[in-house]
Image (tube, rainbow, N blue to C red; front, side, top):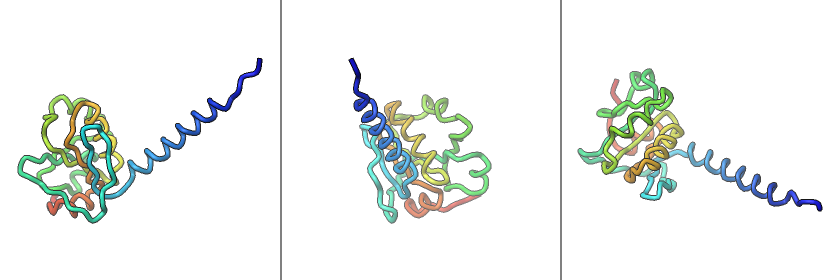
Length: 141
């Protein structure tokens, strides 16, 4: 009896397409939000984000990138340094978080980890420049 390889090939093709789509979404520019389901709908590159005094700004770049310039009031949690998993239990899952990095990739990955931990009010601001433009917060050193 000969088995068909079509289901395996079809599954591989579907997984490949999903991986490509995820990669494109993770690098997409402009702010995007993650709702309670952890999805990140596409934001507009020219959109503005309202920031309250309770909003928490997270910069997930390296300490060197942070020292070169960051949003005023941002908290550094180094994604590349592996600090996100350790920081998640110390963060308030009910708070509003605006997260940014250099391109939107690391912030998107950080948001995925936070959403998986039950955080629901998450926005990926993309790059530092996009974050400054969307929030109106100045870049400081």
